[in-house]
Length: 489
Image 1 (cartoon, rainbow, N blue to C red):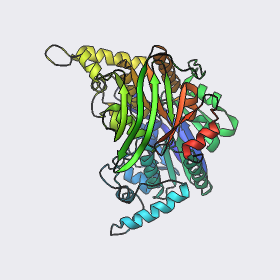
Image 2: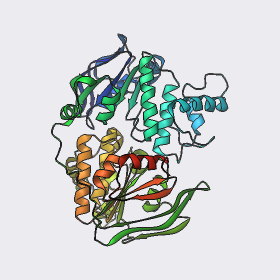
Image 3: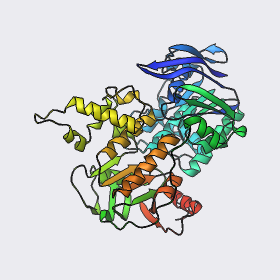
Image 4: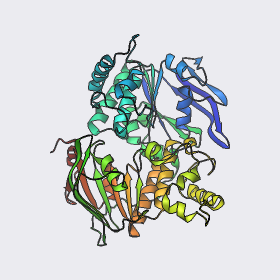
């Protein structure tokens, strides 16, 4: 058994874990759920040897795990996949996997590594990048697939997965969950950290709930439901309307894409795309990751040029467009910088707090940051702490808070709720509704079809760089899912 016995862990003034107990048994999938900052990542980092507890201890089959040694945890048979992929950007994907358990010989044979990886990827239904491709420039979904492959290459007794499924395609998700079930039948322990309660109940045998760093309950999946788990996780959720905004906004056009083509690495990734967005409108683009969404976001952020076609913005001034990128750790935040300095990366906010001499006025900037931390329920020790000290979900909240604080005319949001818990997701959805009701335009790019159907007045599907608009009268989730996967093209 994998067990936590009375574990406490503090980070400065923040108590991340408070006498937490947890037990996962052989031959079961155990889901670990809780809101952002509840302590889930801290607990699995202790199991994986990345952190030491302040008190209490972790055991595997009754034997205490060597604290603070990821190598010892791996030798004991514990492999983990983290929410933020940890790969070497400038190395090829084969070289990254060679750092796992694929290459066991004295000589590095990347061809053998690739062959073994493809065999495992075929079992999972995963697609791999082209031979020799570096990790740099790969989508979040591709990175997550590589992390999962690397973890499984060690043939672990215990597999810990921190939000692994948020960017997987529907067909990849089904194959992946089947793999977890197969690992369970082999007598292994699978710990699944997730915010997706339906997914947890579909695949897990038992569910443990953490709240504010404490264990608040454990249930068998057969004896609970989403409503009870949500109540245990976050209490009462804020009310939110799920009425789709089918009407077309009558405001001025804010964004117009006219037959846009984008190339990357001599390959066409956005193909003849046209789309418009007006004031007060939430427009959605659904798609499986890796079909041109990242390049489209880069284009709208101004860091990539179209090969052809036109991009028209009603207000091209700096700060008029805000972007919440998909990869918050790489593209959205500087993890080593304190929270208030990360906010000042937005030019609009930086100008607001810059004095006559050209220096940022630190005291009011710190006060502003503290206000946003409270408003967006970001659990953090303080504005002076580095972004790296936050959990994945709280980092996402910080990126969203900065974007909305600039009051842009156009908000481009790529997987804006990735890694957010139920309460935070409900809060962000309500903020987007209020922002659009005030005249803001939102382009919501996501692989979460439920989110898009609930929020978007107009909806299109992107697949292989081409856009297919969905009629408001024909929003069948099954058909849209087939379009996302390319099966209906």
